Length: 146
Image 1 (cartoon, helix red, strand yellow):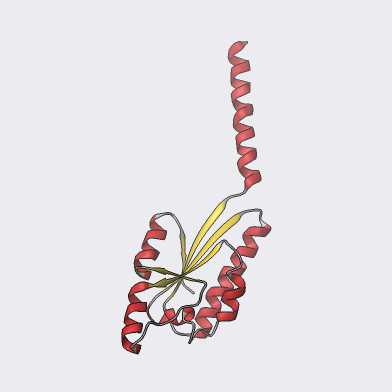
Image 2: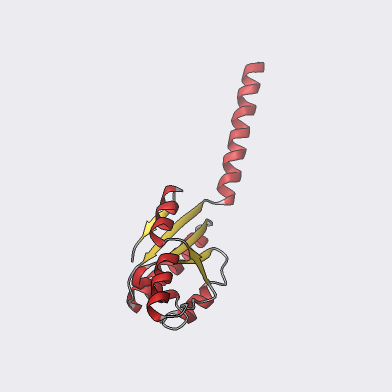
């Protein structure tokens, strides 16, 4: 009888734990890669982020998104050339989205222009965009390239 009671108690505790985990929802992590100076690609990346955030919110899940830019894609986060600066300003109000700028590309663009290239205030500098994408994937983040 004690074994049955212990087994039932254990099963009940497992079910309670599973119910609590389901109630909290799963957290999804998505890295979006932008390496083109193309407004259509930049807008598609932002649309991807917006749509997946809405989808997972409706499903009761959480999502973290990091948009990583490098090469010509850094224009997405440049204060002087970004065709999507207004959208980024609005989207960045959500603490679950981050905009990462490649430090290598920033250095090269700054050297070429003869002065430091100013980034949008929402941008976070990372040492290398490619390395950042690798790090995120190694941590289990899903990878999207629009």
